[in-house]
Image 1 (cartoon, helix red, strand yellow):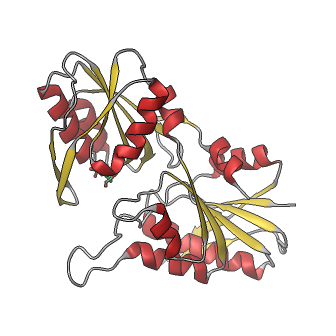
Image 2 (cartoon, helix red, strand yellow):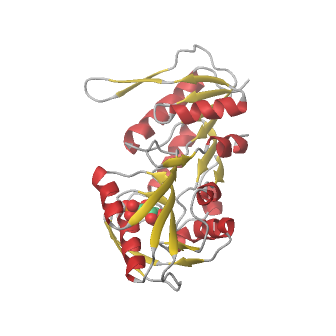
Length: 292
Ligand code: R5P
């Protein structure tokens, strides 16, 4: 029988997945040495079957990655026959090209590391695929990658009457198309230029928002800069109310949440790929149905 092993980041989501699969469930005990190194322990002495290891990569992505590597290697030591990594929010995917000479391309390194500790399959939600498509991502690694999208479920939680969907940049167009189709409405795409990790410039795309409700959709909200710029721009073009649906609530500071509300956003709707207060969509069912 398969076992779901929960990492330290989203144990509740891991438990929901185990219930849906009717699988055994166990979790990793995590501690920290005085110098900050992580200590990982699994109570079982043998885990010979297939393991679905559930661990997300926020907050503290560096620590989460270390925990993933230590745990997967341990699972092999415990006799695990097949490790399927269920990483709802797959971090380190935004650095997918060499922006400046000398930059590390972290997405490539991530897959090399996961492969190195025996991950054979990876299931994730709304992966950050901007410059790379899913096929290019698959070509980078022997790991079998499956991506599921939460956008249909997110859109169902949002207002549907006289709403128009907006993507803050061209990369988010696939999610805007999906949300618009769920709500039976149209969508528009803004243009975004990233000036720095905390600053973006957004320019208006062709879409009629005057006097209408607008639903902005995106994969990740981190500093909130993208949403704030987009919301202000839409307001200046006459948008009546602004709602936001996004998959991964990375939300890297409390100020970020305050700034989002001060930018005139009425409601934020998110998933539980990262633990957060705006999670109204539980992705356990989506993930469980995608597991091999
Ligand atoms: C960018 O490419 C992503 O799709 C998100 O728009 C971005 O990560 C959001 O980051 P922030 O909230 O810091 O603007």
